[in-house]
Length: 414
Image 1 (cartoon, rainbow, N blue to C red):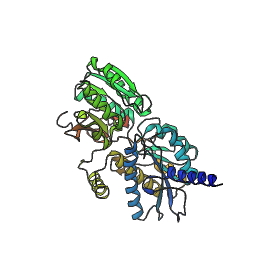
Image 2 (cartoon, rainbow, N blue to C red):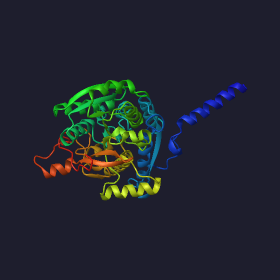
Image 3 (cartoon, helix red, strand yellow):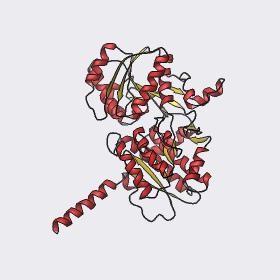
Image 4 (tube, rainbow, N blue to C red):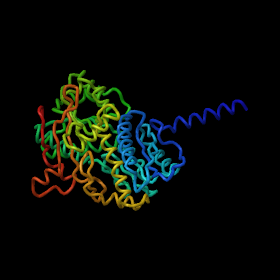
């Protein structure tokens, strides 16, 4: 009997530990006092933990501001938070729990495209609107008409970077190093390669690795003899730093180039000086002089004591847009909120103005290129399809076609 009690106690403690979301938020359903229940799922542990942390902080700040302002149609929002552990296979489980146990009416998340693609069908089948703050693989919103995103997509991102390196920097040769376990990485590599070759560039080497690898020397050694001008590595920050260090150790001086998966305060902490001169595309820059960015950065820095990255900004925008759609819908009913989201036009976000196209992707989102310079991230270039459309004819019709314009505002060193 005593053994059985001990086993039971351990099991209960294990369930409590597993279910604990970050900072004590969320958990099992409790008395809600008429609050609107919203789910958040993200990577709060594992290899992509800074993604979840940054997004969570942005969402939390937005929700606190909304509640302080009276909530949505007089009702405050309560967020239940679940950890995917940086595993796509956990994403569907966490969202199933949020919907079936916590009774959430909408879901915010995830960052990693593979996780969003795993969870999206659960939201779709339950008619629960889902907004991914920053999953860029185009297949995410193709999972159903209840699935939205706040960010640009990989065809746009890959095309924009390929145009920038070929047309602005004059790059003729590139190698590609891809994470084969990541839908994000393989997709972005495909779109970059297509435009790079179309622009007259030549891919002189292609290698792959798998999430969880720590030794990239064999792949880099294979790439080295081809002497590429750049190495395109569309991976996540935790791998990029190690790849940069090992490339330098092998005498490879070509800069690494990547996408928004590099976005993390840990990037330079891991890669250090080996990343100098490398650059990547992302969603915003914290030193943007616009009022929206300056105000957001100031409030965030006052609260968290450091500046927000792009994932925090996208999380903030996603939570605010969800509240805005619920307000316009006048209800939290799933189909009505979905319709309000789909009708979003000219929503003023920190990361740009949001208007959804028929595929539930934002039209004409701004993109920036950041460079690791003197141990910090510096603005290297920007692409603003809306501004470019206003200055030229015919205007860009979609976010994807807008990427064909050459990157503008090239900074020193480009």
